[in-house]
Image 1 (tube, rainbow, N blue to C red):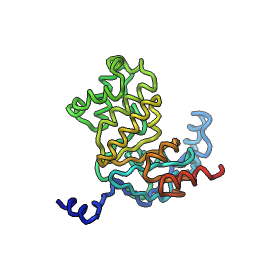
Image 2 (image 1 turned 180 degrees about the vertical axis):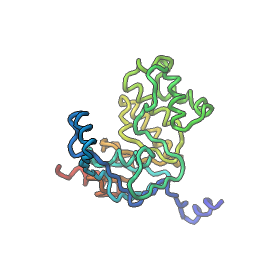
Image 3 (image 1 turned 90 degrees about the vertical axis):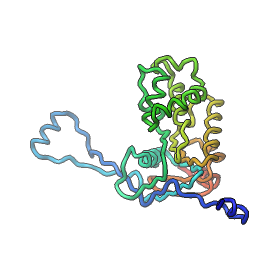
Image 4 (image 1 turned 45 degrees about the vertical axis):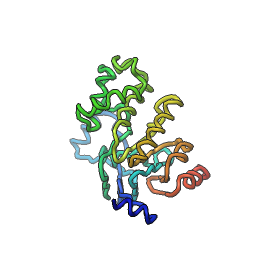
Length: 259
């Protein structure tokens, strides 16, 4: 009723934040010089010699906001921190400082097929991977036929996964994740999961979910796809947000820079 009156007066319903990131920083520590042998490691331990460590800051003071039903692209050179940011949001990694607030459920399409067992059939791996994503057995059963049809792997679904090509495994992984209507999807180069026809099918599914209110944060080097798909783009450079705004404008600035 409230939404109806707002529409009559030309006022759109306020969209809530699905993701809010404030002052996020993440660093990794590594040895300055790797040990050449176990013997050297043992001798240094006996002598009480401390190893020299270096700190590499991957993300620096990141602030990000994504609203309900919004598709946001994440671009930048390799090593800019895109995958690390997605893993932090997914809870795979933990930040050194800052806050990550997610309103609702998150489905990471970061490493498609993670948790698959090569000896199990595609059918069995649907249940295995579905439970990894937080689905119950009943929920997987309700989505089962949709997943098989979407993946187009009906003729192979009862064969062991070790017989699948890498592209077939990615198809299955994407289909399982795409069967869920989560509040936020995290996508890391998962759009390149097959031939042109299947990729278009995946993009159509993303748009379908977006219209239902699902949000997406997509890290990709496929700038053409992001330019047409994303509402906004965020350009990460050396762990910092260099530019944020309308997708076409950010991509134009990104591609015009000499590297």
